[in-house]
Image (cartoon, rainbow over all chains, first blue to last red; front, side, top):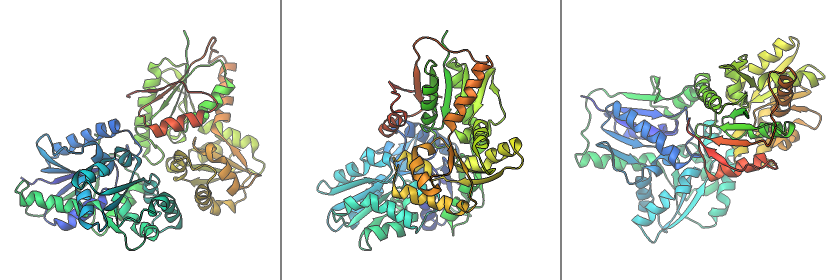
Length: 263
Length: 263
């Protein structure tokens, strides 16, 4: 019986993660859930985000998935340290992202950019410090970057100005490495590089998660899939706007259909 | 038995309406519901917005209100033309706003600014045309203005630039009157005036609704309240950020307590 890998996000930002995983694991099937009816999560409380997350985990379990990836950083912070959900291996983006940042930093100074919920939780800071107590962590909430990405304002002077406002103060700390602690941020990498400079290393969730997932196969916790794979993208609400955004974020990996589901 | 006036919005923007109503009706009690756990509504589908709206109407009915005001423009568009909910008078912002704009226009050219959901519905255009078939209506969605208000970017060069981008094209049509078709927009009136010019008349939901409500008392559909009034503000989620925003939007009308409720 075929078993897909489940993956969820508050909206469509997690498609940037799905895209990387779909390329790295070309034989695996995926079942994505984007909670568009209640997005964004980044400005909501931990209690509300956890309530929504548990509903989505139950939905994905019903789709008979073999593992679940919490692609949403804000949701990852409220499930930190939980390695399974009702017997299904559970992965979040925080730990792989922290490990990847520590692997590339040259000066033990790491900046974390994220939503208000992610930064307020200090999940990256605490995880980084538990892995490497001497590391210096600089945290910055960037709440307007998600709506800017959703409005398609990529490589845009206004996006650059807003990024500059968020980052001007912390830039003086001269960190070598930046964790893009939100699935939307890789989309505006060009704008962020203009502000941060070419030399700063940007750590993205997708690559870090792919390495973590690979380890689960190597440890025989997950069994590889065979045959023709399927990529399902389920959403809790649908508008023309999000449909266009979905195809844009996944390109060139095609989405054949957006399934609307009720949780 | 005391009966409050119910009022709801996707979030806290409707507090700009509550503030006006609380000043205009100093003896009336109000019960406000802000659906912070699922905000914003402006980028969601009509089906999802209506589902959320019906849950909130049921909640307010249970609070024993004597009338319900849909302060949210996006929600108003999906209840347009519905004059009651299970026997309780129901008011939306579209019709009073349209009537107020027609009362002040000097050239029969009215611009409507709103969320994607509000503009996509054409609710203002259709209502204006049904009241005054010869009127010219210019519609413009301004999706980023809500997050900018929620981030407190009031009287800010970035807000002005984003407003300029939305309005530069339609400005050439030289309209005399603009409907602020979203409860958040009165907060950034200064920024909008810088772009639109001092001479343009801005129509706000609060004032228009107050006139509509007054008519319900004059027609004896509503009975005035007596005694010490109470203003309840209920929300479906609570973070420090929204608590600060609530107090800022209501100032100088004090909020004694934010009640967290589950729908």
